[in-house]
Image: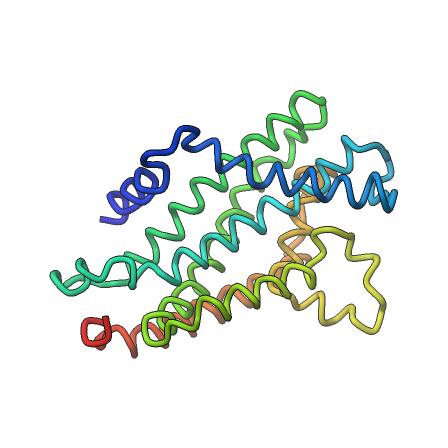
Length: 251
């Protein structure tokens, strides 16, 4: 059923679109161009030792693409129950599959955009073949984090429709509190612990280590994200299981 939901989500997303799945790549590329212009052309910031706009673009993509995939997964999951009102009311089945289907469908588009980054690294001769086997571990951790948070977001959005606007504001703040546009080393020491325990900071650092530096992150590097993954899964299951029996009544 989850597989069918993923196919339906992907077909519906690009139905009637002239460019289809190309839109998945255009949005992050547009953001990349904006950030490149602001940071590289105007502010003349260099976060890489190599310098140059090409290296800086790869640096930004390695952080920006995982974040966009993570954000989209949770946002889609938040509305997965409300968007399938007829299905929830007509059939008796675990509604958790709707959340899982939304997160996994967003993960497919993320993997496509990640493929573009890998292609760019291959063309430029910077693809670190040795560390690529570790990449699925990071993708799994990212998807599982999104699923846990998606369960919580879907529960609240179904009961209270103000959840999605609040979630969008949270993501806006969360984005700038995550070292995506800047390296973690730029964060003042008094805020270091706050950023370290940001659930997505270890993932961003690990993605850049694997894709750009050819290094395999140690468990010590990513364990905060692993802790948050367990916490979000537990809370997500707890909250979702409590509110799921009343979905049909509030939809």
